[in-house]
Image 1 (tube, rainbow, N blue to C red):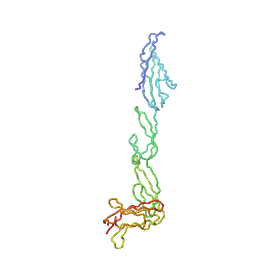
Image 2 (tube, rainbow, N blue to C red; image 1 turned 90 degrees about the vertical axis):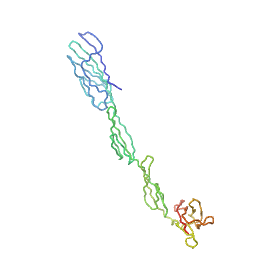
Image 3 (spheres, one colour; image 1 turned 180 degrees about the vertical axis):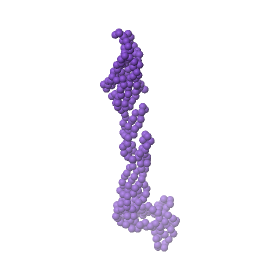
Image 4 (cartoon, rainbow, N blue to C red; image 1 turned 45 degrees about the horizontal axis):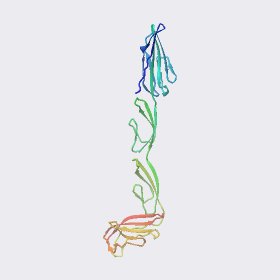
Length: 306
């Protein structure tokens, strides 16, 4: 720990002769000590209470400081003014001259100015040292205290984290598009998806969904009745030209493929390996080339009733 340093030295003179030399008996002066001060503060130093026929004081200090006053104030002290302030005091006690020297150390704690950049979510505010909170982006100033009470100014550049992205997507007539949040969209428009980023903040994704003009989309029935009456006896795809058709598969509840074709005129009659399949719901997977020339997969269910 830094402490105030006081030095004493003395030369006692009587009738122009040196009588003794050694430790000085203080001239009954008191010095007001400031051990540690903050940069920019005012420092008051005084010497008072002297007794004698006459007293002479001369101060010497850092940065060419001099003074002959018994007290003075250093205003707005800076780092270059840190150091020893030595008072050379000459006291006349009737026939005895008592010369004392006192050295006073002033320690200056510099101002600290830091700049930090903080990024917060809109739902997670920044907390200042006084407990106040804020989420609005901008430049703010916070004042902290050092161990000896000096101010430390912090400039805070506050930013909000909300990542934004815009996606372009297109669908053919009758098709649907899966949005980033998992929803399905089949109409033209701008859709907003709110996702969670790695840092816990919201991330916005805008999807601009457009529709491309093209052929009429495939027609897929949702049920058929293979009972031999000639009405709706088979499951087949309609309104899809062969050049766009890729494949059609049908799965049972065990995820087993029980029908497959690569011909748009192919159809399922409710049989598998020549055996009638039970009434129920089956899953189909249709693959075709859409109006934009890309492979499109459509998955759905078909009910077979007898």
